[in-house]
Image (cartoon, rainbow, N blue to C red; front, side):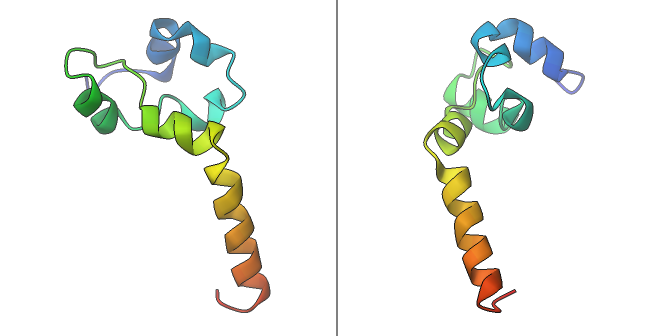
Length: 73
């Protein structure tokens, strides 16, 4: 498991190769994925899918920009 590569993950999850967030997500967190799917070291981290596809990354970035503009950095 220590020597797994993003390319290994993408081969195992071909739908992630074409995902617009694939280069940012890279399969998410391996620990979370294995917790969700104990028999599959190359499983998807479904929380990462929700984070990106659910728009949470954009919401977080907007909030951080707003806080920075208000001087809360």
